[in-house]
Length: 263
Image (cartoon, rainbow, N blue to C red; front, side):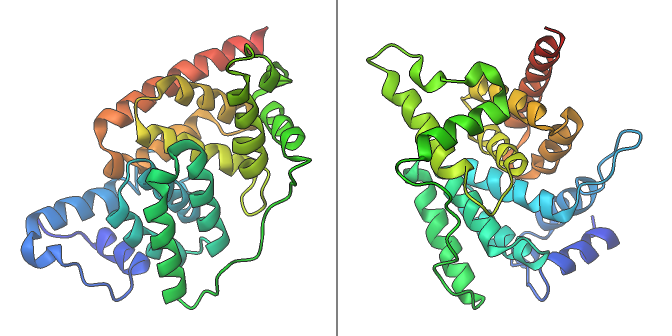
């Protein structure tokens, strides 16, 4: 098998001047993967009237799933590609920061260090401009509002709804996950909910939460078709089992969303 023209030209756009080491040691695998990831997946079949995914959205999703599946080496190379096609340093940092709420610092710390190293190697001065919008006094209210904005009125006062012995977890979810991260500038709310879908799809083992965030995506305006398209772009990076599980969650979440919409 030889590398096709589209894959070759697309890789040159993403990785100008980059030498693929596997071309020498694993030429067959190199061509199999590149032809699939950089041609078939990029040029996936689309539904009637559906536009191809833009490169910026594609690479925001790829970075998010690579965080979720702990693909550090692939994250580093795809971060370079993301920056080359216009994803900004602030957007990259916001993806990494928000992933902490879903993956934990144990998984995220190597990615934060790698991101800083790559940004500095490209002449980006750190720290970047602050993006926070809340204080210790406002984070709970702002986070609870973000939950309502995404998931609807059923989330109002959700942080205070658990039994007393576990209520602090709901409080942290509202004030930390949503109040500290979702309220930041740098990414809009629709993009933040989309990358959460990507984190959870790649993480695996959290299908109830993934289904809930499918509903959140739909409620905030990210369509079922968009979720399928984004997930399709991530197949080379997370594999088929987690992709198929995520597809099931998309359908289950869509069914819940349709049922809620009729009530």
